[in-house]
Length: 82
Ligand SMILES: [Zn+2]
Image (cartoon, rainbow, N blue to C red; front, top):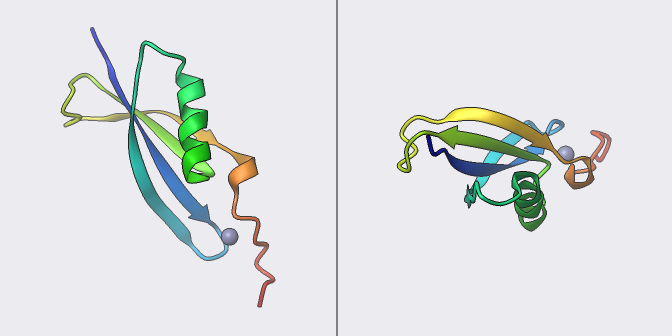
C-alpha cells in the first residue's frame, strides 16, 4: 500500500515555553527521507521536525512516524538573558 508523508517543522524554546508548528512539507517517499527532513529543518532552522505518515493523500488520519531533533538549530538561549 502506498504511503504518504508530511513533515512539520517546529520552533522550540524550552526557556520561553515556545512550541510552535511552522510549516508543513510534502515528502516524496521515493526519495531519501532523512535527506528531505534535513533539508526542511535547514530551510526553517527548525530544532524539531515531526514526520507523519498517512494511508491517504488527503492526510485525514495521520500517524507520527518519527521525530527528528537537530541540535544545531536549537535556540541557544540559556534562560539567563535578562
Ligand atoms: Zn530559547
